[in-house]
Image 1 (spheres, one colour):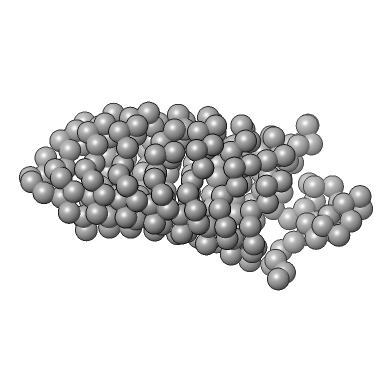
Image 2: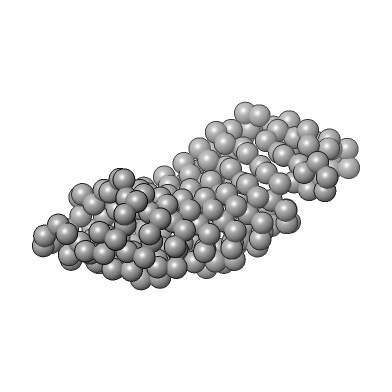
Length: 219
């Protein structure tokens, strides 16, 4: 199956030694000084198959955007060995399996978009990145509960976990995420009381808790 836009990529696949300079490849941005690949954007490009483990060799990569393609399989651990990564967008594919524990190695990651896939398991690893600002993991198959380690995600501004299979109570530690402006937990199986600690989130502008199994009064 052919990609929509593939300048440079197919030439390299056929004969690496005759390939064009990566700066001329479609969707690739190269640092003008170091000549290292710093960004790849192949969004909505009809790319299919698995994400290549070779991405782990791009040790200066800051941005990887592969959204709205036909990618399948698990997210490779290799992605999480790139220490410079700041933005990772894989939403709108058919990725499955669990999020690897190795994601905690992305100490500089600010933006993570993995919504509209078939990912499952626990969401605990998603709250191990200290600089994460925006996380959207909605419309997947995540189960278990929201972990109390969410308190470590103090830079979070937007958290969207809508339409998964999350259960249990919302941990009071969520009140430590003081920068949250957008919190969407709707369409899960969360239960118990709505934590009064939500009142501590003074910057909150959008809050969706509907279609769950909460009890008691609204704080």
